[in-house]
Length: 489
Ligand SMILES: C[S@@+](CC[C@H](N)C(=O)[O-])C[C@H]1O[C@@H](n2cnc3c(N)ncnc32)[C@H](O)[C@@H]1O
Image: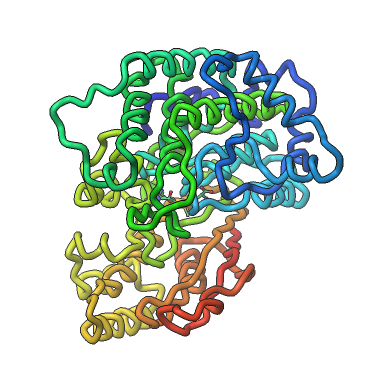
């Protein structure tokens, strides 16, 4: 466990019976956790919405609050409905890998209905923090693990919704003023190619001026972490580069609209400050802890958790490291694509071929690993087939070693969960199967088998939707599905 605020109050939280810590503000407000759980918040918007237009002169805390209040006032049926379609705080950073917070809240409510009020929640793959925020919205204690250093920081910043919105706006006014005055001190380094391809010169100057002003003014006060998140969150809004369905940056595709950085920054802050006030009024509780912890390693005391709600990486070749390449390049954490493996990928579950190729994995060694023995020779046949098919394909992607390593990693995760969960725990994985090079991998079934081998009692799969059935230009015709793997025991 590590990080600036990663282990705040951990011991006291673990020691308390109901795991709930009430922030000073939420104690004083109306609504309470039940209000949050009963539908005052609604579906998660896919886009970061920046509705508050204000000029630099108008950028004060009072103006921000007036703008957000106007947004909250019901404007007839459709206005209220539209308002409910966007979840506060969740929307601060668009993470395509995320799942529905409404559904997590329902899952928590179902658990409490059937298993009783003792509900200590774990999310071993936190991503942008959906489960942890849903736990805070329903008033339950929760712990989360995430190893992607950049996404960890994003989720950690989102958990600071309980800070003072007025102080946040004050920090941001300081940043705006300094950025406008001082501009960008370019220094001797050349600008990374990706940034030159994603921004016009003027836009990049303004963004970098905001980044420099932040670096100069930021202190250890956690409000500054929210300022960092606000700048991070506008990087795509201000870029003319397209983004793929899965959030990689596509510098060769152009968007029709991009927003001027200073205006986008003010709008983002207004959105964040308004959301902070809103969830504080709803009675969200500061009851979640996020740790930089690898889900494959056993953690802390045994038998701590009653409910796990999570979505692990699918073995579908999505590269979580690449997903934050633009942001990490902007902040100088990497210079380019080649740095991603050491900076991020090597810490993650192996779920993309770039990962297994770079690690130069040997299929025979992987198949001899005892973690795979519960799957019998079925995984050997799939790995062998993938090894053959790749030789017939131009790309020669290392899906064979990716799949073998993926299930070794996930077996270790089950053992870590078995140790962390109490007897009778309920676990829900949102997961999809996969068919690299058209070779079917029954991910849900194999994960279920590995869960039983780790000591859980039962598993079942609830399909939510079909995948790979719509598009004409799909790479293969194998029907796929996505759904919930429920494990009990
Ligand atoms: C599907 S995403 C989770 C998204 C999350 N449910 C949300 O709503 O934002 C999976 C996450 O697992 C993280 N991850 C990958 N390997 C990990 C590991 N070994 N330990 C902890 N987290 C890991 C990835 O960085 C990624 O953010």
